[in-house]
Figure 1 (cartoon, rainbow, N blue to C red):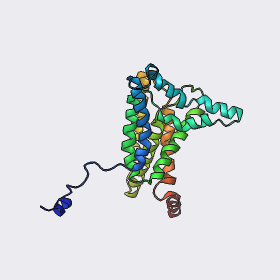
Figure 2 (cartoon, rainbow, N blue to C red):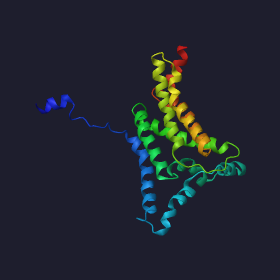
Figure 3 (cartoon, rainbow, N blue to C red):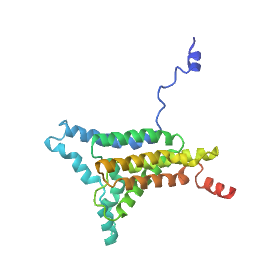
Figure 4 (cartoon, helix red, strand yellow):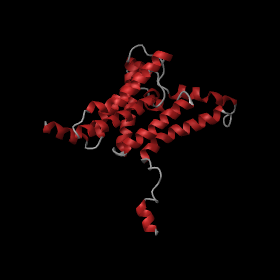
Amino acid sequence: MGDGDAMRDGYDEAPINPLPPVVWLLLLPLVAIEVVLGAGAIGLAGGPEAIGWRNDAIQRFALSPAMLDQMLATGRFNADYALRFLSYPLVHGSVTHAVFVGVFILALGKMVGEVFRAWAVLAVFLGAAVAGALVYSLVPGIEAALFGGYPPVYGLIGAFTFILWARLGAVQANRMRAFTLIGFLMGLQLLFGLLFGGRPDWIADLAGFVSGFALSFVVGPGGPAHILRRIRER
C-alpha cells in the first residue's frame, strides 16, 4: 500500500480535531493563573506567603456588587472597578472550580467556534461576562463577591443553544428542545443549592446564558441581515 492509499484510508488524520485558536485564547490565561497559584500553594514559588495567593487574587480581581453601586451613587467612573467586570472570570475558588470551567470552555468553545467566527466567539464570551456581572450587581441584597468563569461559559452555552435552535428550526422540529441543556444545568444548580446551600452566582450564570443567546442573533452566522431576512419572510 502506497502513501496515497494511506492518505485515502485516513491514516494521516489527526486523532483529535484541532481546537479553534480563539478557544486557546480564552483558556490559556485561566491555565496560566492556575499554574502560578498552584505552584505557590505547594511551595514551589513565592515562599510561605504564596499559600495565600489565591485569596489575594480573588481580592484583586473579583467583582463586589458594591463597586457598581458606588459608581452609580457618586457618578464617578472607577477604572479598577470597571475592569473587574472582565477580570473576575480569571480567578477561581479552587483548582476543581477552574478545571470544570476549563473543560466547559474546551467543549463549548470548540462546538461554537466551528460555527461562529473567532471574533464572534470572543464577543459572546466577553459580552456574557459583562452582562452577568451587571445583572448580578443590580440585584438588591447581594453582597458576595463574584468570581470564576461560569457566567461567560454560560454565554457559550447560550451560543450553543442558538445553534441548536437554528438547526431545529431549519428542519421544522420543536425548537424548545434546544433549551434542554440549560434547563438541566439550572435545575442541577437549584438542587445543589437546596441540598448544600449556595452562593447567588446562578443569577450571573443565567444572565450570561441569556446574553450569549441574544448576542448570537447579532454576531452569529448571517448576523443582523439574517434576522431582517427572516422578518421580511414573515
